[in-house]
Image (cartoon, rainbow, N blue to C red; front, side, top):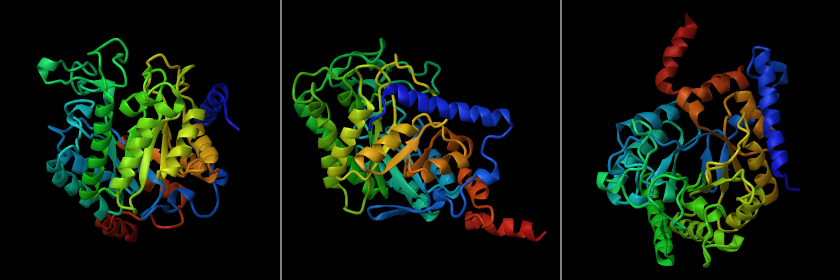
Length: 401
């Protein structure tokens, strides 16, 4: 049975109230006797196609805005390498442009040409060597392209064409918000070309050593802008009905799946809801997930929002988990939960209750690269944590003293 928007809000707010109650008692997690007994679900391996993750802790894609012409740098090696050493099972590299115009900013990572492969391979080799699986999120920013990075004093403003920016594109020529260039409405041939760019990028990603591929169809970027009736008002075969609005999604999934080895898992990040009346809904997400499953998608990464700045989102601990839960239950497909999941006991409960199959951490892994080690100590304190061997000898020496 579907949950309506009020039910979702209530679930999210209930999670916030519970977290507040714990905080009032001076603790951020349940007492030890409230934790699940036996082996931690968080540290149970997860197999998707031919890939097995050592645990169910994944780093959510987070833009680093540290590239030039799309190339990976030493920053990317250090950033992803630290989380691999820290114990996460899957590291999904940031939204990576499948075309130059598909980047959010001029400083975003890219994979639109073969020259990008060696720098990415350097990173994935290190991640694999330390036990994690490297993943990548393939993306096209659409109407939100050609912005300045947050590090810029003019953060989030659009880069003018004369300053090296480029023309945003979308399903229609409607702006996102009130700023920036009006996007160019894509022709059918141009839509097909972008689908081809996703497939070519997927092949490069495999050559670069990525073991998991994710497509970005959330947060108001190009993929989501076709799905959401708030952003897509086309009247041809790519607009109007649910079937037409999901056509770009299904065609892209089909093309990418065909380009990948059979053993490579394919994930799709969706916005479970637009949080606005007349927008994309959880029921739409469930229906789309059922279609994606038949096309070879292995897990749906469940986020929300991004189609409009007018959304009222009840942000709180675990506020997006109900979307992962409903898609998992009704579409019968594995899901990933993301959004203000910060404590090991919180992550463990989501998995133990069957609400999701994978926990994606974003900013918490920026704050705490070794979060997985803390989670092990809190959830499985009677067994030695599987720390990197380069550190294990020193900690063993400390214990002997």
